[in-house]
Image (cartoon, rainbow, N blue to C red; front, side, top):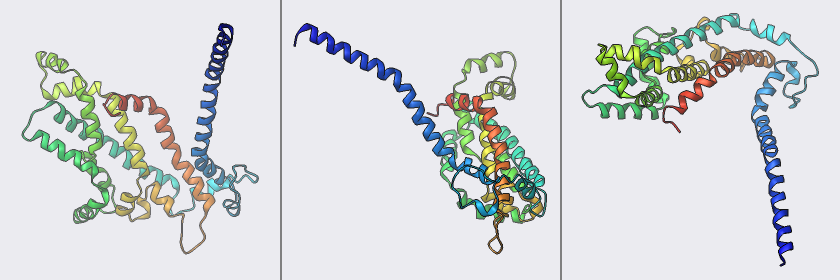
Length: 294
């Protein structure tokens, strides 16, 4: 192979490489857009179905609306024994109580594990981590018996009070990892200024834990808002139903199901979750990225 031929071959390969380098980002974006469309199709179909007549929902798998039915939302809002506003308010009460409980109790427990020294600290931390692997179905029966004897069935207390006792070990672990990343020199400086353990926690640690607290609040909101099993177990009065349990009431095994109304209210129930994730996405990413969870 002559020198000129070699130069021509190298130049052609470089041009091919440059061309692929320019085309590659476009190909990646097209593939990602297609994958996103596939994953979002069920949500899009649900939104479209909420605007269709009931007899056309399962006939057409497409996402084009031929006969727009806005009245599905009006009918779904008043289809059950109570207006859907009541179920939204019930869910809001449970969610706010759960968020407040997790923020207070989990942050205090995490501070104890990360900064304080006490007997069998490593053992208790290991037990706390093991509780993450414990399915809720294992403890739901003894919990139900306990809450029933306390007279808490058909109230929001079984759904809120456990959160005040740092029962969500995942959030405790998340906050422990975050606090361990805070320099201990800040604690020493605060102690020199006269702060005790409580002062260090309130004035130094807690203000720096905003990303971890925001992550806890967002996850607690989403998980509690979408929780169906626990709320179905403890809430028996239709007036106390939360959004997931109320949506289940649209499906009736003995009579025809109003699919259009159910899909319409399902869309309404997704709006708070979407807004919570959209508004807190920056804190969510920062909170997870800075807690050592890879």
